[in-house]
Image (cartoon, rainbow, N blue to C red; front, top):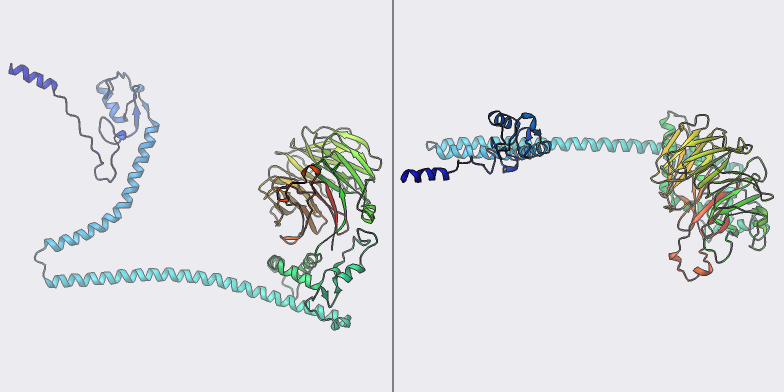
Length: 632
């Protein structure tokens, strides 16, 4: 009986399982049981998984299957070694787990080192009962010496770091001092040169000695007279404008106004001055006197301070009727001889006005000499520089139309663009050559003598603008939605000569300032000036607002005009980054919008152009109001 009870007890007893520790030996991280091998109870090495889903060390499962062809955890039959597979995910988790343990050990061990040394000293003092007072004093003296040495080493290190820092500061300040001395020497040299010029002028014109340069009082400059007198003497016949509108009448700008403008833009002018003069010296042009750099800055300063404001010469309207609220003007261009200017936009009409008639009319109600109607909204117009009256237009259907602006008749249609066409331009050197850019990511070249296109440039994004180099038959630039301006030689159309990168959004306009400089506009509210021989931006112009609309861009060679989404016209001088002048358009509402508040309007200046050879600019806004403005 007792024997049977013993057998039952043995049957009930289970084989004791090996203990699974909750932490790794000699570590400071709790062990995660998910990473333990069920055979060796250590972290799994080279995790392999059986068909039943259990993971083991490769060596452990290999040895186990060699002894028995069953899973050590669930007794699932596993006949061969090729029925186990690497567990890559578990291997990665185990590696991260080991890295955490190692990182924590590195952080804790230095602290434990200091603690262990202190504990060792404590053990010596407590366990050695034979230590007498002399030994204690000796130990204290040694500890004091050690402390002094450590403190002196710490102070030395701190002072050495401080010395290095002060030497670096001194070196930088010395470099700044040398730079300032060099700049002061340049300024002194230029001041002496300017004083010599003033002396020569006074010798030639002694009358100037009777008119010392003093601040303007009540709008009267002692040297130039009153501003009103000057303006009245140069005022022009007719109600709206000046007979000498194309002349640069700088005498209208008083000395006080010039000084005020210099003061407002002093930092920008200072940067421009030193960039010109220091560049001259850095290039090794160490002459005995001021070189071309001073002349260049003098010209820039003169042009920057030349104008103070806008004078309206005429106001026109592009709107079809008072009930039509959408009369956006998309393009304004002067013809070859500046006798006519054309206005086009979303009303599908091109209106041609005679310039002299417009500015000399006694009443500000103007009628076009020719009006042409397109089948779609017009995005751009351009005049031929050779054929009087020949004009090309692009529209939202992708059609390029050639017009005889004198009669209003269509002479040819080009319809190869697949999407909306944004821009069209005549080549000034080859009057038969035309280029157009479209949303189909193509720049297509046309000839006025051919019915179909003669060449095509493939772009990587929508083409928003295209413009020929004014002095070349083979070179053109276009801006696109890839935020870049691409400059091409048409003799090698496969790749651009230069790609100008710098804008953060789509490039909406690219215009040539001259044969080597391009100005581009983008919806990042910036204009950028480029040189075709340099890859990087020369200057960035900021001040206007442009985030979503085409606001117009034009240059006369020195000044750059563009629109803004605050319904204002901005004019920049190409040598400085800040705006020179601004002109605010009046808010004009249709009959249906008369109760709308001014802050609720979304009007913007949408097109702008310069009258070649003059200081007259023509601008239009999204309400169809066109202003002929003179810089004075």
